[in-house]
Image 1: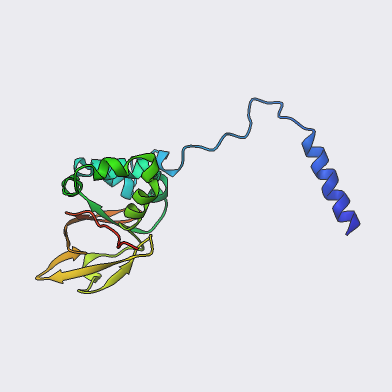
Image 2: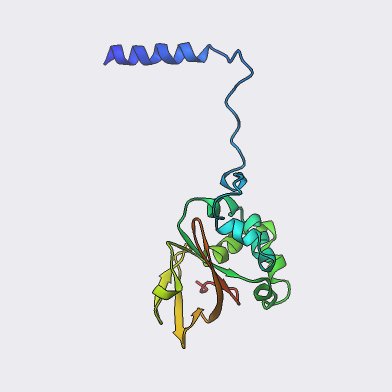
Length: 178
Protein backbone atom coordinates (compact mmCIF):
# COMPACT_ATOMS: atom_id res chain seq x y z
CA UNK A 1 0.00 0.00 0.00
CA UNK A 2 2.89 2.36 0.83
CA UNK A 3 4.42 1.63 -2.57
CA UNK A 4 1.17 2.48 -4.35
CA UNK A 5 0.82 5.75 -2.40
CA UNK A 6 4.46 6.65 -3.16
CA UNK A 7 3.99 5.91 -6.87
CA UNK A 8 0.86 8.08 -6.98
CA UNK A 9 2.69 10.96 -5.21
CA UNK A 10 5.59 10.74 -7.69
CA UNK A 11 3.19 10.75 -10.61
CA UNK A 12 1.43 13.85 -9.29
CA UNK A 13 4.72 15.63 -8.60
CA UNK A 14 6.01 14.82 -12.07
CA UNK A 15 2.88 16.14 -13.75
CA UNK A 16 2.70 19.28 -11.62
CA UNK A 17 6.08 20.55 -12.77
CA UNK A 18 5.41 20.18 -16.51
CA UNK A 19 3.97 22.94 -18.63
CA UNK A 20 2.70 22.74 -22.18
CA UNK A 21 5.48 23.61 -24.61
CA UNK A 22 3.28 23.74 -27.68
CA UNK A 23 0.51 26.09 -28.64
CA UNK A 24 -1.94 23.27 -27.99
CA UNK A 25 -3.48 23.36 -24.55
CA UNK A 26 -6.67 22.12 -23.02
CA UNK A 27 -9.45 24.26 -24.49
CA UNK A 28 -11.91 26.04 -22.24
CA UNK A 29 -15.34 24.43 -22.10
CA UNK A 30 -17.35 25.31 -25.20
CA UNK A 31 -20.77 26.87 -25.41
CA UNK A 32 -22.59 23.53 -25.13
CA UNK A 33 -24.63 21.13 -27.21
CA UNK A 34 -26.74 23.88 -28.76
CA UNK A 35 -23.68 25.26 -30.58
CA UNK A 36 -23.06 22.08 -32.58
CA UNK A 37 -23.48 22.83 -36.27
CA UNK A 38 -25.22 20.09 -38.24
CA UNK A 39 -27.27 20.94 -41.29
CA UNK A 40 -27.79 17.32 -42.34
CA UNK A 41 -29.40 15.55 -39.39
CA UNK A 42 -32.96 15.97 -38.21
CA UNK A 43 -33.33 19.03 -35.98
CA UNK A 44 -33.68 18.69 -32.21
CA UNK A 45 -36.57 20.22 -30.25
CA UNK A 46 -34.74 23.52 -29.70
CA UNK A 47 -33.74 23.84 -33.36
CA UNK A 48 -37.35 23.20 -34.39
CA UNK A 49 -38.57 25.93 -32.01
CA UNK A 50 -35.87 28.38 -33.12
CA UNK A 51 -36.92 27.80 -36.73
CA UNK A 52 -40.57 28.59 -35.98
CA UNK A 53 -41.83 32.17 -36.26
CA UNK A 54 -44.69 31.12 -33.96
CA UNK A 55 -42.40 30.23 -31.05
CA UNK A 56 -40.17 33.30 -30.59
CA UNK A 57 -41.52 33.99 -27.09
CA UNK A 58 -40.88 30.39 -26.03
CA UNK A 59 -37.34 30.53 -27.44
CA UNK A 60 -36.68 33.79 -25.56
CA UNK A 61 -37.91 32.15 -22.36
CA UNK A 62 -35.70 29.08 -22.94
CA UNK A 63 -32.66 31.30 -23.47
CA UNK A 64 -33.45 33.40 -20.38
CA UNK A 65 -33.84 30.25 -18.26
CA UNK A 66 -30.62 28.84 -19.76
CA UNK A 67 -32.40 25.70 -20.94
CA UNK A 68 -31.30 25.73 -24.59
CA UNK A 69 -28.41 23.31 -24.04
CA UNK A 70 -30.44 21.00 -21.80
CA UNK A 71 -33.15 20.58 -24.44
CA UNK A 72 -30.54 20.19 -27.19
CA UNK A 73 -29.23 17.01 -25.56
CA UNK A 74 -30.19 13.47 -26.52
CA UNK A 75 -33.47 13.37 -24.62
CA UNK A 76 -35.90 11.91 -25.41
CA UNK A 77 -38.28 14.76 -24.65
CA UNK A 78 -41.88 15.61 -25.29
CA UNK A 79 -42.27 19.38 -25.35
CA UNK A 80 -45.68 21.03 -25.19
CA UNK A 81 -44.80 24.26 -26.99
CA UNK A 82 -47.14 27.24 -26.64
CA UNK A 83 -47.34 29.55 -29.65
CA UNK A 84 -46.68 33.28 -29.30
CA UNK A 85 -50.44 33.97 -29.22
CA UNK A 86 -50.70 31.71 -26.15
CA UNK A 87 -48.28 33.94 -24.25
CA UNK A 88 -50.31 36.96 -25.38
CA UNK A 89 -53.33 35.51 -23.53
CA UNK A 90 -51.53 35.81 -20.18
CA UNK A 91 -52.26 38.90 -18.06
CA UNK A 92 -50.38 42.02 -19.17
CA UNK A 93 -46.82 42.12 -17.85
CA UNK A 94 -46.65 38.42 -17.01
CA UNK A 95 -44.13 37.46 -19.70
CA UNK A 96 -42.00 40.53 -19.09
CA UNK A 97 -42.00 39.81 -15.35
CA UNK A 98 -40.98 36.18 -15.88
CA UNK A 99 -38.05 37.23 -18.06
CA UNK A 100 -36.49 39.27 -15.24
CA UNK A 101 -33.47 37.71 -13.47
CA UNK A 102 -35.26 37.64 -10.11
CA UNK A 103 -38.05 35.51 -11.65
CA UNK A 104 -35.75 32.83 -13.05
CA UNK A 105 -36.98 30.08 -10.68
CA UNK A 106 -40.63 30.78 -11.54
CA UNK A 107 -39.81 30.83 -15.27
CA UNK A 108 -37.94 27.54 -15.00
CA UNK A 109 -40.85 25.94 -13.13
CA UNK A 110 -43.27 26.98 -15.89
CA UNK A 111 -40.95 25.79 -18.66
CA UNK A 112 -40.35 22.48 -16.88
CA UNK A 113 -44.12 22.02 -16.70
CA UNK A 114 -44.07 21.95 -20.52
CA UNK A 115 -41.53 19.10 -20.80
CA UNK A 116 -41.84 15.35 -20.27
CA UNK A 117 -38.99 12.88 -20.31
CA UNK A 118 -39.85 10.35 -23.00
CA UNK A 119 -41.70 10.53 -26.29
CA UNK A 120 -45.48 10.72 -26.03
CA UNK A 121 -47.08 10.46 -29.46
CA UNK A 122 -50.68 11.61 -29.67
CA UNK A 123 -51.96 8.27 -30.92
CA UNK A 124 -50.71 6.63 -27.71
CA UNK A 125 -52.38 9.10 -25.34
CA UNK A 126 -55.68 8.38 -23.61
CA UNK A 127 -58.39 10.62 -22.22
CA UNK A 128 -57.73 11.34 -18.55
CA UNK A 129 -54.14 10.11 -18.70
CA UNK A 130 -51.72 11.92 -16.40
CA UNK A 131 -48.11 12.53 -17.36
CA UNK A 132 -45.52 13.66 -14.85
CA UNK A 133 -43.53 16.63 -16.07
CA UNK A 134 -39.92 17.64 -15.43
CA UNK A 135 -41.04 19.96 -12.59
CA UNK A 136 -42.69 16.87 -10.98
CA UNK A 137 -46.28 18.09 -11.46
CA UNK A 138 -48.77 16.18 -13.62
CA UNK A 139 -50.55 17.31 -16.76
CA UNK A 140 -53.85 15.75 -17.81
CA UNK A 141 -54.57 14.59 -21.35
CA UNK A 142 -57.98 15.13 -22.88
CA UNK A 143 -59.18 13.26 -25.97
CA UNK A 144 -62.57 13.96 -27.51
CA UNK A 145 -63.72 13.44 -31.10
CA UNK A 146 -60.13 12.88 -32.22
CA UNK A 147 -58.92 16.17 -30.76
CA UNK A 148 -56.30 16.32 -28.02
CA UNK A 149 -55.89 18.75 -25.15
CA UNK A 150 -53.27 19.19 -22.46
CA UNK A 151 -54.82 20.67 -19.31
CA UNK A 152 -57.44 22.14 -21.64
CA UNK A 153 -54.92 23.62 -24.12
CA UNK A 154 -55.62 22.40 -27.65
CA UNK A 155 -52.88 20.51 -29.47
CA UNK A 156 -52.73 22.24 -32.86
CA UNK A 157 -49.87 20.27 -34.37
CA UNK A 158 -47.01 17.88 -33.71
CA UNK A 159 -43.46 17.97 -35.01
CA UNK A 160 -41.01 15.08 -34.62
CA UNK A 161 -37.46 15.97 -33.67
CA UNK A 162 -34.20 14.07 -33.37
CA UNK A 163 -34.44 14.04 -29.58
CA UNK A 164 -38.19 13.76 -29.10
CA UNK A 165 -41.43 15.33 -30.23
CA UNK A 166 -43.03 18.75 -29.98
CA UNK A 167 -46.77 19.16 -29.54
CA UNK A 168 -47.74 22.72 -30.42
CA UNK A 169 -50.41 24.05 -28.04
CA UNK A 170 -52.62 27.14 -27.97
CA UNK A 171 -52.17 28.05 -24.28
CA UNK A 172 -49.40 28.33 -21.72
CA UNK A 173 -49.55 25.56 -19.11
CA UNK A 174 -49.35 26.96 -15.59
CA UNK A 175 -48.25 24.57 -12.84
CA UNK A 176 -50.52 24.10 -9.84
CA UNK A 177 -49.93 26.54 -6.99
CA UNK A 178 -48.30 24.89 -4.00
